[in-house]
Length: 246
View (cartoon, helix red, strand yellow):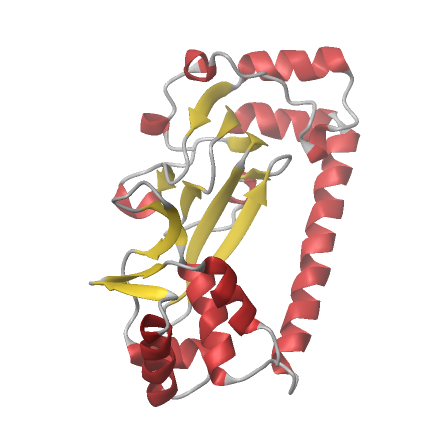
């Protein structure tokens, strides 16, 4: 979590400040959980709130546990400029990869719903891993499951049943979209800056013509609204349905 974005333990007053639901800490006794909770910086967050943006001067300073709600992480990768998204739900955590020497350049974190997060300092987390075997084992098991899930996803992407170019584009648009509230106070999804058609085509392995036609059809059917330089997804359910094979 960025130092200048976490304001202290009192911001989350009124919500239960407990780490009992954090998966990698589940084997710790209540007393240890209480001690860790007392050392965390707690923060209540609102939907759409930016928790961290390294490109705008943010700074990782510890491991952040998602106690309630969910957080979307975004990382840029590769020359194609593709952005990879990871949703961290309640019970998960982020920020620990930097402690293991893995670069987190360009990382950003946005709350997908109202919730509560708690940040433990880097030194304290490293000490915890060194002292508590159950936490280290739980973290290794978590990484193993993520690795296996990624292997399965890569295998699926290389197969012939991935869907049409338009379906892949619809999935990419959903991945790019963030929670948003329009001028009438209605919840929707919004892509603040829609990538160029050429970039989108490269990401989903299709043609620029397919991208242009698919987006135009979404707008024509009222599923999406143009909001230059972005795009508003007005009907998330219908867009998700379009991603499914016929």
